[in-house]
Image 1 (cartoon, rainbow, N blue to C red):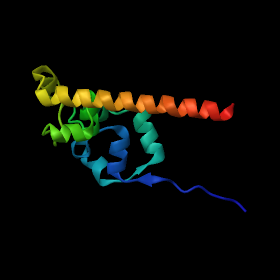
Image 2 (image 1 turned 180 degrees about the vertical axis):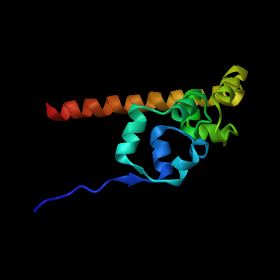
Image 3 (image 1 turned 90 degrees about the vertical axis):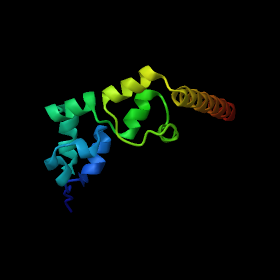
Image 4 (image 1 turned 30 degrees about the vertical axis):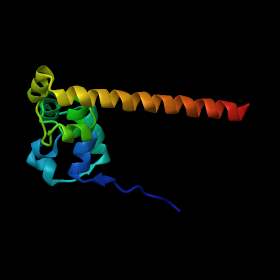
Length: 131
């Protein structure tokens, strides 16, 4: 019995998410078609000019905006940022240093610290169970 592999495809929204770009800012042919796994791999390995420009200048999707500001996506929403932002807009927020940004960065730092503590605790438990 022979097995043949079917071509794995994904919706443009999924491909845009994997590429870290804002779907409405992509070219129409990207938005309207389907993307195969091979095409996605090619876009990641050899990004065309439009993809390089989007990654550099934006507009960026919320996960990218949150990462560049050092906050969570929920922290963005609490700060009133609900739209995709360009690199310049992100820099303006950083330069302005609003109170909500400092608060959300502190919250994010606490979350990371707690996650690291829990990982350490679990690693110690696992090491103790192996003894």
